[in-house]
Length: 294
Image (cartoon, rainbow, N blue to C red):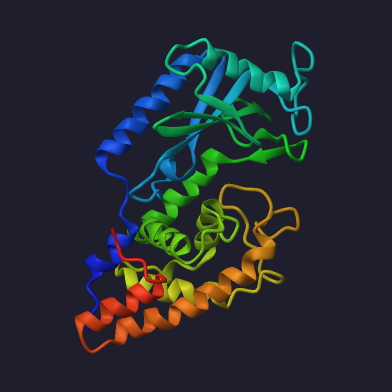
């Protein structure tokens, strides 16, 4: 028996409070109503949708698929109504936000989204469909790179929900634990961004997950440290390429991520073997770079 209390470890992986979730739900429902079902198929994606957000979640990702526009790059049917630029696709949503007194002046155009800041941030991702507005993939646009990209938000959610079922809920809990750890050991968001942590842990065998948080962190962590990204690609759960392809900014950072994790696992192992609860807690805190649970 370990002297490390499971409830202490899992405090690092706490999900958002009911009040924060209620605020986020209200915001995304208001924006969905503003855009209108006739013009957009709207769906949630990201940590909030996937139940992998940490307790202090402050953002929601909403994909807004234009019903009348098909991707000129990936679409399998001819678009109707002529070509519409991505600048105009962004602008159509921005005009709706600016015309609403609740949101006027509170939005900003980003690389792939329009960020609306009303306490809880909502990132509205303009999208066009590939085969249907109601099915994956959809196409989104990177203004920085000037290219369309396919995105599988529905499939990603379904794959995560299925892995969570297979692991008795341990998968999503462990994702939150790793997100808390990454945030504790480095402020560089390029070292294992949230989405890539989900993809990477999804690729780890189900049998390494446990509802004992320390066990899951150690077993999954060792699998990640041993991962060879050159010979063992990590395919996105929803579909598409590996997260290690050269165009993905995570790939060059993976070795640093592994090194940070290797160092932390030594303390995590010490915590699991510690002869007293106090020593176990102290070692676990060192595994999280001195960060105590909230």
